[in-house]
Image 1 (tube, rainbow, N blue to C red):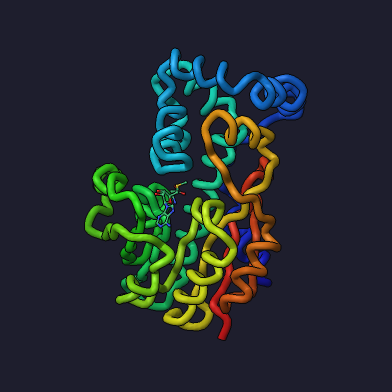
Image 2 (cartoon, rainbow, N blue to C red):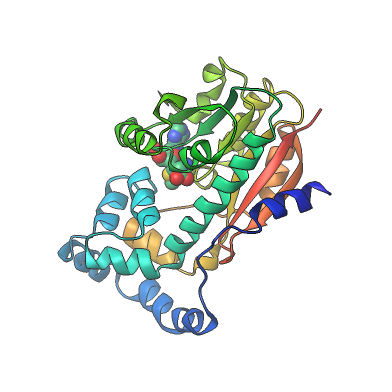
Length: 283
Ligand SMILES: C[S@@+](CC[C@H](N)C(=O)[O-])C[C@H]1O[C@@H](n2cnc3c(N)ncnc32)[C@H](O)[C@@H]1O
């Protein structure tokens, strides 16, 4: 089996959320233009009036971990959030990315030849995805979770405890651009999910190089691309203040290719917003 076939077979039975043709057409014809072109001030006032936690968390920390957790949960308290999170393509794609990435990470940890398997998670937030994988793998594995915002860690510890993996996570407050200072333990698996879209090309390449310097050949790195297929980038920029960098799988693969990785396999979630990509440290 080729690497592509192997990774695709891992994802074959992941239960994704899908959007049917009719709903997709209504979104494109009505909802997305409304979201993108109604006055931003009006949207902000409406979201404030409805006490949207998703909007408030983005205003406080655009693209931060709290908005991610609200989208993952899928059942927020406020009606406005229920609409944004339940019907929004971006939130649906995020939940798909979580499931896809957790499955691929589980299998990558499973295939490691020794224990404990050390996973390094960059821009990890509270660690929702890696704790999903740690709870599902049959290997003994530990994860180091690096994030700029230590306020994610208390929530992260609660989540890890609920999944029975509290003793397998270590939280480190720090900037991923200084990852070379955090490599006391050579990682077996590196995870960079939900972070590349907030980093410049040079930063991604530098981080990739720093990690590659201590990673044994063949070890995997997992990251994601982001496309505009969600249809509401203008809304996110104007209303939430969220400025994401869109890159195709090929663009990211080229960046990490220069940093020492190859043998890339990209798997798309069904909405086509995210690809989760697995690369390997080149010999
Ligand atoms: C969109 S969230 C993704 C969280 C998690 N990886 C996930 O996919 O669920 C991005 C996270 O990256 C963190 N972050 C952004 N820039 C960072 C940096 N330079 N160093 C460390 N963490 C960073 C943010 O604090 C935030 O928790």
